Image (cartoon, rainbow, N blue to C red; front, side):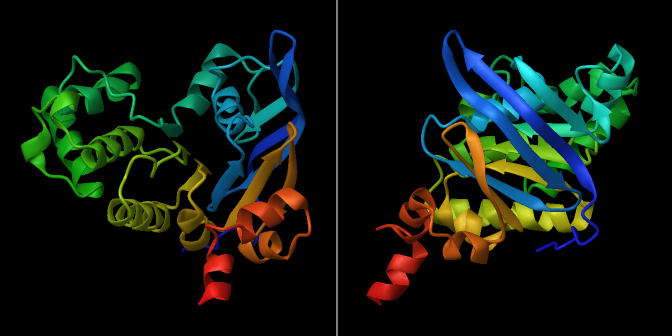
Length: 261
């Protein structure tokens, strides 16, 4: 696992961010730093706003207040060209994969590349094979459609698409949801390997305690519209905050399992 954040080089900076829907405030003055080269696990209760913050950072949801800087660029104040240049440097894996159902695997992977680069078809096809290989798939899936893929394969294809433009940052929204324990463990190992070999910064929205224990360098916790804690797993386990106690020492936690053993 990478521990490359010793220099504390902040690659994503969130300050005083407010997001709401109608009269309901979901994120209330949220502050968060993500450091270059780390895997940050972002956790919170159901409906707390974990995915809302991720979608706000990447510009899919509007904020009412605050600033978001990615790679040093204020995303709200940047020109269209500057913002587009930053967007090219991240990849996103949505919870259900969000593959285009009418496109083949090959076409799904080539879609973001065509948007930013002018490559020949031969190079595009070679890129697809290379990215599929990165996530443990081979060329035999190229002409399949999303409906023909298993849940695990869908996740891997979606991850390959997120890596298509060689990003610096990868956003993962519940990457192990819907996978059996073996598949989830394999996907965690894949994320850790890619992070280490490619030098990625990973922002991972998750509720998977095994992922938090095995691949995350730091964990940030969202509750009551704010980030209430951020740090390594030992910080989470030592916290006396009621939500953290319930989450990390509850009936399904590793700590509870160890105590019962």
